[in-house]
Length: 181
Length: 199
Image (cartoon, rainbow over the protein chains, first blue to last red):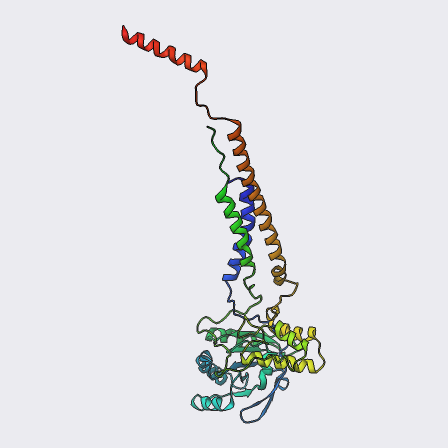
């Protein structure tokens, strides 16, 4: 094989192999995280008791927003971690569950068996889920004191992920102020 | 008999095969950018609710623009389908969102921008002419053109090789008899050997 053919085959093979290698390292079903670093979309939803919750009124406080459903097994797997987190950071962290593609009755039955120290909000027509770019559950958004999405985590939460994300939003400064240490 | 010059058949086929198979790589889904790493353990649940539902697009009542958007936007659950065709409840909710925004007076560009701002360019089934999406449009015609040229050159080379071997065969007739001078010298050699043997 002469050098011209070798160069030609290299020109074909190298980009193809690079594209394959780049693709194999990623999850093809993962949806891009477009809101990180941007303002969290405001919402006003009602919890299972009918009480209204508005994100705008929580400005200045770190918020953990967890999209979940009763039919989602990874959601059930991370539920205990969310419970512990809400209890451990009571008073300094706002935790909310957003019900995704589910009905109120199955959610109430589930929460009766697995009590939760934080409020769960119904999302009619998945309006808030679409606003947040949710593609499936569980997805968790960590919102800092300035009202920006610091991190979006897709999939069940790990303690290590939770620790790192909480450290970021608990140390964040409200809008207009410099960030804390 | 002269030796026939063999054309590079195996190499030519390899070049053609490689060049023609490259479009298959190009048409593979491009990887999403800026993706949050997925959790290590349990796979995410899909967003399909237990009961099956009808698809979101209603061509009888939706405007052509809404139907078009329903075909342009990718379902985040059934990721190979448009939201206008997907049975997933999330797709139907997204169609409802499209209808709401259209009824509010937003145009196609605004509505598409709303979804790309939340899901990324990945949510468009027809990738935009920017970033990684541009390669999806540019590469296939380039690779096809390259494959065509490579195939033409290989066929031409083989035809030239076949022609030159025919010319060589026609120009040089096979020698069935030795030239006279060679025949005479071999006879002399034989005579010399016989004389030597007879002594």
